[in-house]
Figure 1 (cartoon, rainbow, N blue to C red):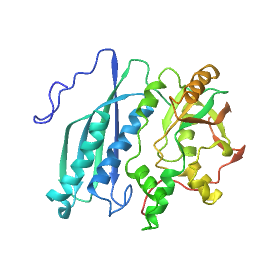
Figure 2: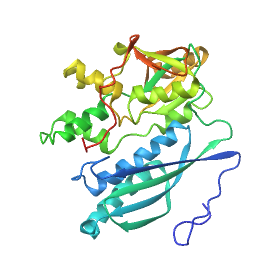
Figure 3: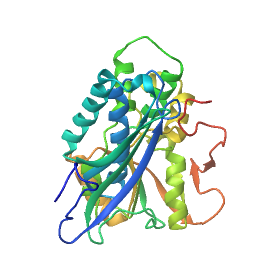
Figure 4: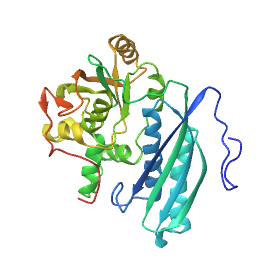
Length: 303
């Protein structure tokens, strides 16, 4: 970076032989986070959500801008210190720099634009999945939706699992290293924000293919498996806020990734296969059956 905060704009010198990757997200109170969330929780979540887009592209995150709209009662040193602490903690972990932004009065909303770098021609995209490719996800599924369900229920009981779920919601772990490792390996990739079926559907639509998932293969945390199977399967399939990567692999590259998994270099699980060419209709099935439209969906608190 040639010039940071202080002037009317930042000056950025991209590394040689790289392309810039840009992604933006806006988080709004009572839509993307509960009204009683702390400033630190809001900042951590907002930055991690944006970092996940970099992971999905196989990019190394470098810089970000912040537009913060907040009501008068939050425009105080205590809240701003909490928000700044959350922002600084995540920025330090991922070695990224704030290069600009703005603050205004209004309903609480956080808009971040993230910039990253990827070697020319190596960005992960959604449109490369082919018939016969294996489908994988990193980490575990259903945690994001389970956390959202807990927050909506205003559950006050603090348990080992509730603390884990709250951490997954407010501090999801962007899969940056996995995304970088999958450059030139994954045929297609996306991060799971709106739900596995919905986001895999984006890959299918962009690639002109159809996918089938195997319910028994879905990686679910052991603590969630103690709950109703209908709940955790619904959350895994259609619940949002996972911020894990869903990616596809050719047979040759599947061998490479399976070796990484066996060696503990990557936490990922095969969950299905790209089955046939298709650009309309039911793009994603589970155990060869259609997914119920009424199950789960986009994360928000307004329903």
